[in-house]
Amino acid sequence: MPSLLLGVTLIGNVLAKEVAAPILLHPSTASEAVAIAAYKGMPAENFSKMVSTAFENAGFSSRTSERMKDGTVRYTFAYPVAMEGQVKNIEVVLRTDENIDKKGRCATCFLRTTVLTDFAHLQQAPWMLQYAVNRQVLPAIDQAYASIQQDGQAFMDGSLGFDYKNQWQGEKNLYENSFVGIEQTSLKSTVIDAYRAAGFIFQGDIRKDLRVSDLVFSFPVDPDQAEGVVYKISLASQLDASDRCYPCEITEVYDPYQKLPAAGLSGMSKRLTLESRFAASRALALEKLKNSTAQFLRAGTMFTMPPKPAPLGSPRPHIRPMTVT
Image 1 (cartoon, rainbow, N blue to C red):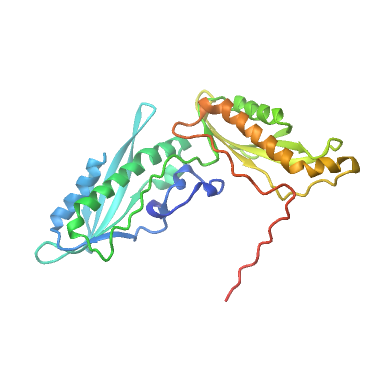
Image 2 (tube, rainbow, N blue to C red; image 1 turned 60 degrees about the vertical axis):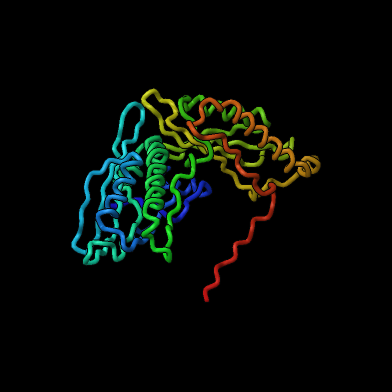
């Protein structure tokens, strides 16, 4: 069964448009064979109890503990994720390698990464459930590992150390900003109004698929030309039973290197001020959008201002081909 492994490589917000689900916004690894720490001389019974107690104290319930012939022990825990008055038990598995000497002590006992066993299903689950899993389960896992690090310090192999990085790094949105409780049509109208008030011309609402649509705008380059800077706000939506956002997420989509229409003689002065006018209007639209949607931001998040892009009309960066040696 596919699984999500929690431990090393950060997948940050900069990749949000490329990842498939909110649950991928936090650290993950490609293999569960990553050793976090090694213990020597610790009674095997104490090692097992240390692991189980740490997770139980962090809010997990212990389900099974299976010892394999090769010395591998598979611990299964469940965490009760509370959401909308209901509880969903999320199962996690921790594998250890316990090489026991004749005295029943760890010759070397390896503590390894934790796996969400139902990752394939969770990745397809509603985004709000994925956010709830992130927000509740990941800090609990971090707490458990912190307890293990502290309680097993006297037996820890110093040459390996305790190579664990916290999984929970605060609320992150799949897209730039996330809203809950507002009707999708109202959110679209709010976005359109904010950009119109800042000088953008609304061109249309283009549906890309069942979940994503683009609100397309044009920013006037010259006063006497119909063509302008192409600018989009992409809206990805999941709705509740009342057709309200649960959540709806937006992100800015436009190419600062896009080819601009040729300037007429009467528009040369306007062309010289295009970048400053566009930057000011964009900032004004985002500020209006921030103020008008504050009450609908997904809990725990703040309105994110997209980073300032390259100046309009800049030459497109040349990407050098990789050199193979």
